[in-house]
Amino acid sequence: DVKVTQSSRYLVKRTGEKVFLECVQDMDHENMFWYRQDPGLGLRLIYFSYDVKMKEKGDIPEGYSVSREKKERFSLILESASTNQTSMYLCASSLARSSSGVGYNEQFFGPGTRLTVL
Amino acid sequence: AQTVTQSQPEMSVQEAETVTLSCTYDTSESDYYLFWYKQPPSRQMILVIRQEAYKQQNATENRFSVNFQKAAKSFSLKISDSQLGDAAMYFCAYRRQGAQKLVFGQGTRLTINP
Image 1 (cartoon, one colour):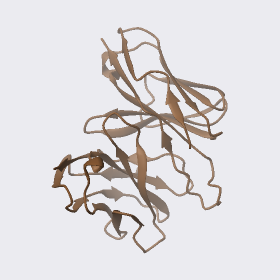
Image 2 (image 1 turned 90 degrees about the horizontal axis):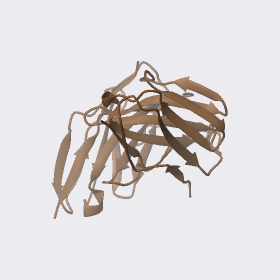
Image 3 (image 1 turned 135 degrees about the vertical axis):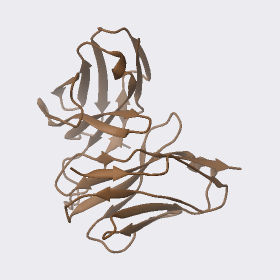
Image 4 (image 1 turned 120 degrees about the vertical axis):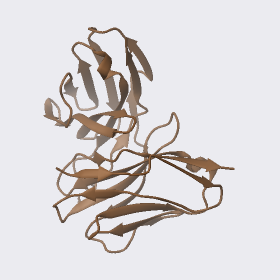
């Protein structure tokens, strides 16, 4: 079974702090994603990475950065946390191509980190 | 840009009955995938069912089936014989062929009444 783990289920930080959210997957997936989930807005993509040291901005990258030094690990960084970054953060991973070559590649999600910025 | 809309923030159904969750999407692409994901309370999001746009036949997975209307850009999820374990947030999602990222709808919270 694919396993995607996130370093914390709940996190409370102060405004202005630097925050690191860690995600690890154990299935050798090329792609990794960070989403934030807010009521009424669904999931929105912050950043994704398709290879080590490679990244691409998603729909809402402002105020965030990412790091992928190893294939299995993808970190989301809030350089200076603000109250409007209080949210649920979900990590996901997927193969770049399906094993069948059809092109479908399921995204597997972690349990999420609920971040509160005070 | 592609958008996905779920117009029902909340739905409820009696146990053992059937419920349909709605989803519409907007795209100019002809090749894409559509998904329904389930997020149980305090548990990880899991894939329920997927549909390839080039397939006319509606996807089915046990009690879960979809009604895919490509021309109308509609992709609804039907849950038959609802069970208490079906209670969750359900998200509709879209992915363009060749792209890696998913575009999600706002979600529908489904409650199952015993």
